[in-house]
Length: 351
Image (cartoon, rainbow, N blue to C red):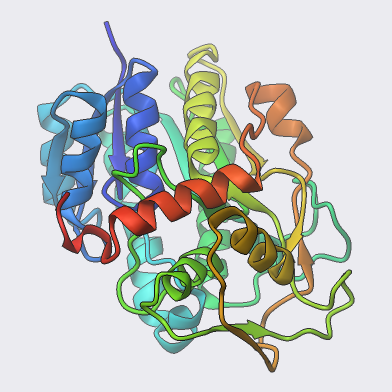
């Protein structure tokens, strides 16, 4: 019998791609999403890709009665927790909203999981938990620190989950927690069908959707924040990973947790990236060469809180999860551009 996975935030950018990969790997998927930063159309399109309906609940993970009801109705084997607010700039303006949404939802979720004896959890963390790293590439044992409220919510949640796991040891728990903390680097790209992709509300916060919206004429020009960093061309270097590779990392993490012995508790962190860094100017140049579109950009001052370089060492995920990113920058840009041209206004327009 197939295992059933509850995916919180499953209508979002990464969540929707994970639903496709989970379904194709043979898992039964239940989605819970409050649609505050996502659209129902994404769920419909996932169903189109996988060729069958998803079980979907519009609910907020902080709503314990609603969440308990879902657990009551289904035999859930594991949870992948994506639900959360995720814009760094917005978190600086609205820290309380971020702490309430991201941290409270996780507390309610783990309380409900414990109540229904569900102990397998994959958590959507972030490379922001490394703050401004002293060196690159970054391994999982680097010191943890955060430079903004969004990053701190991820770090607090990691601490909560590590404490939970540690308590199992003290309490000699019968059904100890099995937790994977997946620290993503910079997700980009879209499903190769062009049916699902990143559909940001308003002005995009991230480079790739901004780039593609400038190229298609929705936005006038791209601002490159700083060209005086100690990098090869002066612009910030990041580890961009294709969202499908990232989604497959969640499937591998879930397989890993479910294969563990019942009485074996663990809480492990894994970097999910390509292990390579690309600068902003390299991204622009590659985008122009792959799509044939010129991108209007200007160099402006650095943004506060931005760091020079950030890319992953992914050896641990390869060794323990059997996962390695397969797609290159050309794939990321090709799939982004297909999504953008097919869906110039994101999910607002149905195909």
